[in-house]
Length: 269
Image: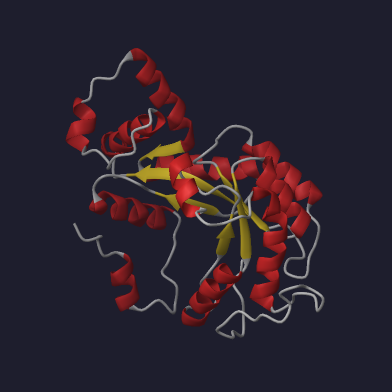
């Protein structure tokens, strides 16, 4: 918690008002990688509630005076602190968020089943806190948006194959569109692809917008976090551009042209 608080205080200092702090119980990877991330730590997931409280305390300099680490201060000093969001794909995350009175983001792109029930419970059981007077929620959705439905399906084929391989235990690089279209799926594999598509919104701008609005209505939220993970970087950028245009979004007023260019710069190689 202390290290996370320092990292996000630094980010808040660099970009005040533009940073959210998302936390969750799961490491977000396979078992071996999760062991590597926790290497040397003697504290397990059972301590997660305490860690949430300590993170809030370090972030806002509000640890109780009798806390064993109460004299420790996270640096740098900031005039504001980023809001904490609990990330989750099950009822555990929603329950924690409601108990601590923090915002909650449900990972629809991980688990599209039962999310509405989790979100409803979060709204009903939310306890106001010093940080948040009323529940605040969003959903994370995997989206592929292209100029036409056919283009969107072609681009999404790379994600279909990568997700299938991950389910089979192979965590390799994203396959190319050509490789994905040439792959000969077995009947069970095609069924798995259809199952995984329940997490994904694929289509042209009008179709994607309609489906996202329907999802937001189902979950009772007014904010959606979008992830587009496809083979070609240009397709990814164009998907975001089409989404922004469809929803009438504009760049933040304080986002300089240089900052926008750096955010859209392809990863080397």
